[in-house]
Structures are given as C-alpha cells and as structure tokens.
Length: 472
Image (cartoon, rainbow, N blue to C red; front, side, top):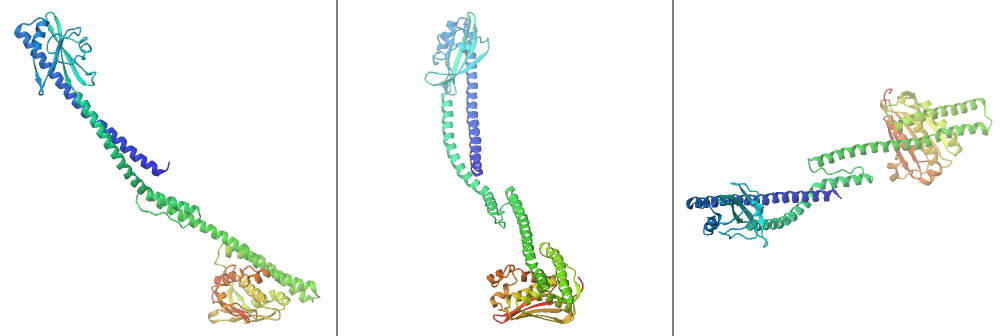
C-alpha cells in the first residue's frame, strides 16, 4: 500500500475510533447517570412506602398480613408527579391484596429470596412487551410472619432515548467520516508533495541527470531530508564529475601518447632507413645513430611527462634556460628524413637567444607543428622553422608551410581535442586530432600563446610566443 493511502486510512481510522469511543462513553455515561437517578428515586420511594405502612401498622395495631394488605389497597403515594406502583407479597411470592397495579410479570422471588429483615434489593427487569422496569423489594416484619413491599419505576424511556442518541450519533459519524476523508486527502497530498518531489529527483538522478535537485519547501523533517538529499546529490555529482574527468584524462593520455609516439618513431625509422638504404660515411652513421638514440631517450622521458601533464594535470614542470638555435636545429633535423621522403623541403632559420622551457615538452609541440605542416604540404612544397628573440627576454617560434591552408571558419576550432579539418586525409595519414590540442596545453604551461594565420591554397603559419622568465 502506498504511503498516501496509509496516511489517509490512518487519519480516518484514528478519527473514527476516537469519535466512536468518545461518543459511546458520553452516551453510555449519560444513560448510567439517568439509571442511577432512577435507582436512587426507587430506593427513596420504597423507603417512604415502608415508613408510611409501618406508621399505619403502629397506629392501628395491625399485626396480621391480611389487615396490612387491606390498608395497602387504599394507600397511595405520589413521587415526581407520578403515582408510585407497589404491592405486598409473602415469602412464597404470592401477591397479597393491596395496591397491585404493578406489572404482573415482575416476579418477586428473585428479590425476596433470602432477603434479610430491614434490607432492600433491586434489579432491572423487562416485560414481554419490551418495557424496562427498576424493581425493588424490602421486608416488613409482622406477628404472623414477614411481608415484602415491592415497588417499581418505568425506565423504558431511558432506553429509547439511548437508542435514539446512538442512531443520531451514527448518522453524525457518517457525516464526520466523509468530512475527515476529504480533509485527509488534502492533508495527505500536502504532506507527501515534498516526498513526491524527492522521489522524482531520485528517479531523474537514477536516469543520469545528476544535476537534478529536490525542492525544499519546509523546515520539518521532510525538508531536512530534502536538504540532506541535495547535499548528497551534489557530492555524488562532484565525485562522478571527478571520475569522469579522470577517465577522460586517462583516455586523452592514451590517445595522446599513441599520437605522440609516432613522431619520434618517424624520426627513428627515417634515420634507420638512411642507415639501411645507402652507404653512409662514419660521420653520417654517427649522426644518424645519435638522432635515433636521442629520440629514443626523448620518447622514454615523454611518456612520463605526458602522464603528469594529462592524467595528473601537473602544471609546475621545471623550466630551464635553453639555447634556442641548437634546440630548433635539432628539432628540425629530427623530422628532416620524413620531410625529405615526402618530397618537402625543410628550412631552419633560428636566432641565437636563450629561453626558459622544458625541452622534451616544447620539442613535442614543435614536432607536432612540423608534422602537421608536412601532412598539409604537397610534394615540392616547403616548410620553414624560424626562431626570433622577442622583447623582454621572450622568444618567437614560427612554423610556416606552403600547403593547402585552413578555412577561416575552422581556425577557431583546430585546437579542440579530436577536431580535424579534413577528417579523411587526417585519418589516412594516421592523425587523431590531438596534436594541436596538446600543443596548446604545452604552450600555456610555458606561459606562452599559440596563434594561427592561414590562407586557403597558399599555406599556414603557426606562431608560438614564449614570454621571458626565470627558471621554474
């Protein structure tokens, strides 16, 4: 059974039970009070009759029951405006002559059996016609034995009145139950509305809408429950957001590492191909082996730094002063075999000046830019890597190509993760749309800016502006 109906039935049942018990107690109490008053009047009436008859006995020296019965036949007593009903009977229950206007079905034996002298007894009796009487008896001693004085009072009206009250109360109870039922429906609805709101919020959160909150409309226990639920939901949303972000960072790391490993592998494969495909002088062999060794070491260091940058979101990599001409020439030479294999000419023009940076990460960014330029440039084209000292100790790195260019409407989105201008070409060349997104993070980590200029059909220029600074 739903809580709504439990509340409704409970309120109606409690109200019905309380009113029924209260009404019964009230009506029954009033009835018992009335019966008690009639009982008291019955006792008083019997006492007065006994005193009156005893006076007659003493005044006329009556000693025989027949003489007392004859006097009782002409004796009358009025109480409460009504003539008292009484009679005399002997010990066997035989009615003697006298005022015998009492109902004949009132048997005296249940009262007079073993009734001590000077004592009174009474009982409630009913007649064959359904009438109710209070029947009393007392003993009067005479010389020839004991006679019993009986009297009664008609109390059927009290029973009829009680029955009428019960019927009226039953009708009132029906009307009261109907009214309480309507009121209970309204109260149950108002009380359960916050719980319904809370239940809806729980259902929406279960469907994945973690931003859903319950309405707090009261300061009672339900309101406190709603506030606690909202606090729990906020904490849950934060934790899910953190878990989602952590999972996304791990996914980004996996994708970025898979992407970034291609560039050093390209250099390693290119120089290895030079060693295998032609005769080389000892100096060329030494240079090629040196590039292969450096790219292998850089790949080893890059994996850890990418983990810290993407998964752990580290932002305090130590920056050290780096000679930029040697750094850019080394970076360009790392990708030169791949560019030459693609039929693209590489030119490096770097101005000597120091800059504070993390060589492994910044080389990753520059190699990404060079590799993108290679992919965008057709055979016979050229890629230029330049470096110029800037004001205030800064340094400007620029990668230009004579490739197909980027449409103006695409320039604002090319640094978004997994965004590719030409998806079919990028996938065919092994791209995943992560290189420029990673470049942007690396440049921002160095406190620099990444800018793009492009003319479709003529080429693209990417500028990395590094600010001057000190060792991190």
